Length: 111
Image 1 (tube, rainbow, N blue to C red):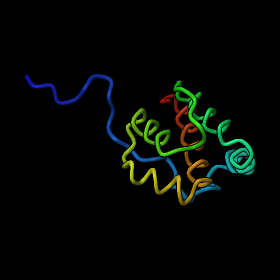
Image 2: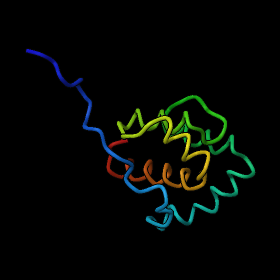
Image 3: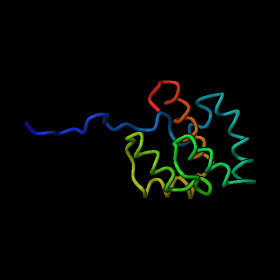
Image 4: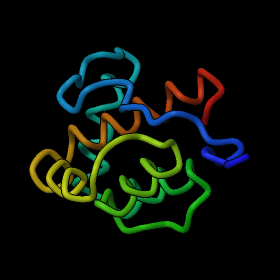
């Protein structure tokens, strides 16, 4: 008998909302402007917020690596190149998407 799946793993998924769906969740959307200010004033604090949610070491700001770690932990499809593009060209959209996804997965009990 061959083992084809690791125990405790689940099927790959996608982010629960799109990168540009900033207003998909009004609660998160309200916090979007706080994230904008926090991102401008203290990107390290923002990175630490996400790292804390993932029980990871605090990183400096939202980065490609924190998106990659999150995708790996939640088995989300994507690539490091895509993470780099999102963080480089749409940093605030990527921030909002990550926050929405973490919040929704917590509500569903899968994070």
